[in-house]
Amino acid sequence: MYNKELEQTLVLIKPDALKNSLTGYVLSQLSEFHTGLRFAATKVVHVTKMLAEEHYAEHRGKVFYAALIEYIMGHIHYADEPQKQRVVSIVYQGPNAVEKLRDIVGPTNPHLARERKPGCIRSLGTIVTLTDDKGETIGERMDNLIHASATPDEAEREVKLWFKPSDIPPYMRIYSTRQSGKHFYYKGNKLFTEHQPGSICILTPGDVAWESDLNALDLIEQGKPAACMLQAVVAKYLVNDTRDI
Image (tube, rainbow, N blue to C red):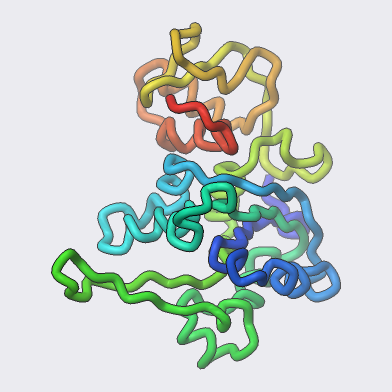
């Protein structure tokens, strides 16, 4: 059951913030002293294309979508340094976590951030013009240093996308979990309950998973519509995994 006192939100410190050595500054602005919120989980993530595409799923088909994917994967700021392509993902928890974090990070657009909330984190960002093969302007990419969930519903989706239950201490989990009753394997955008050559096991019997993930997997296995795509469940299990499946 949703509890505003235990509300959680996802924060991503993006590659441009890392490139500009702003990690310490960002963390100081988001500290418990300033926000009254506490860390529930954190990890360094090498962002796979699957994870990036699921995170920005609402922007599929937009002119800047491909640039967003390259951006969050670190390909733009660390083009020749794959060992540095990562983000810092954090779950913050506490009263009004979503609203508090959104207020501190500031407007999505860095130009508006400087105008409306000078000194906020995103006021240090920039906007990059996107061009096509002919050099004509087709849109913009906002290098705004940080992501923060916009609503409690979005926060739940994003926390579950970036973190497994085992990534979060048991007494700091606010979303329902249950144990898997079977094996689940993934290969070639398909789900299996028995091992296939080249497949990866994402859950085994007894593993604790988000209840919504298991509900989705059960429906997908039965060939029925699920509340989310298979990739949205699987992406978190491929974090920092270098296998090509």
